[in-house]
Length: 107
Image (tube, rainbow, N blue to C red; front, side):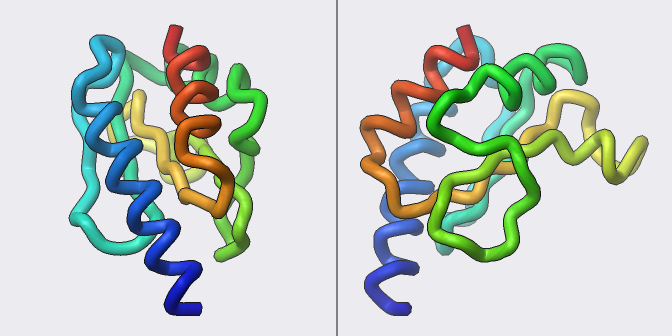
């Protein structure tokens, strides 16, 4: 478990750093611990495009597995969350592969 959490934390940190520099990303929320982060894009339509355009990252709710998952929280929580909010749960895949997938999904 320790090795898994360390790997997921490292991957999430790398992705958060790169997402902060991406022009399509407005806000990144990552406290620096664990594999879950969230980020905002322009609107709900863009968020849906990102989550469905990913090829490696699976569009699903995180249940604590080892596969990287992404989902739009707005469709589940309504007005409680920003329209462009996406939640990502980092898995154990190669971080560079995950970044390439996110980058192409963000356009």
